[in-house]
Image 1: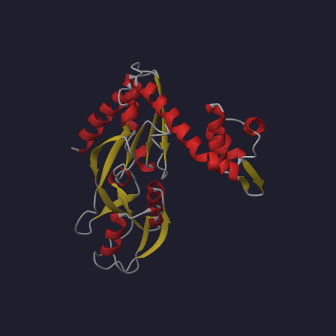
Image 2: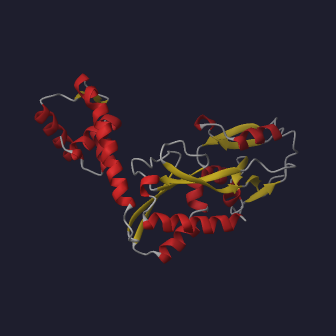
Image 3: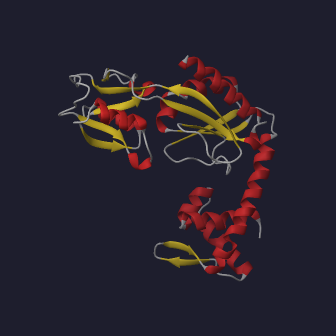
Length: 286
């Protein structure tokens, strides 16, 4: 079985539908369907059960899943190593970060990098999803917590300050109370957020009225007068309709971590971007 067939098998197994698998691999729905049928005919096995909810692995498909994943690991390791040996400043660089970081912190780095290295194309991938460095979903990633994956070279880049914000026309609340105040907070189902716990402790009588997994959405909600929000300073300080509140102390800051897979550490475009990010972002926070 060829690696291209294994990629399709794994995509269908992970995504559950031909359409989603096609989008993941950037192939058309008919191509995925045709290749999957050819694979099953060639092996003489039915790898998936077609159901109303999508494609489910059969016993035969489940039996080869782990072997297909091992094949993927080997292929990706080869791809990363070859990519890491490229010394030309050209090609594509995939950068992953939280939404707010990509919108408010990264632009100066990307602008300067584009000016210096015009032959490198950049893809900025943002959101709460942690894109895999091992699977080359991203080449370099910025996160608010240390990386736990194996073989990742990482460093603490900056300590990011946070602030408390409310609509500019709103009367500031009194710390230790919060009666009658509304809060706009992070969706805590995604994990623990020290700034949210801090805000609730500072305004114990306040009521959470909106939760969102996107700091930009929280900023706009707060600007519209929905409630008080804790935001990274690069986000909150640049909102014209927000005021930064003084509750006696600042919210907990967060460390920003930058990481990349060790197999591509020799990539010239990666090294150039990492060095520039360190120079610009460390200077901005000093």
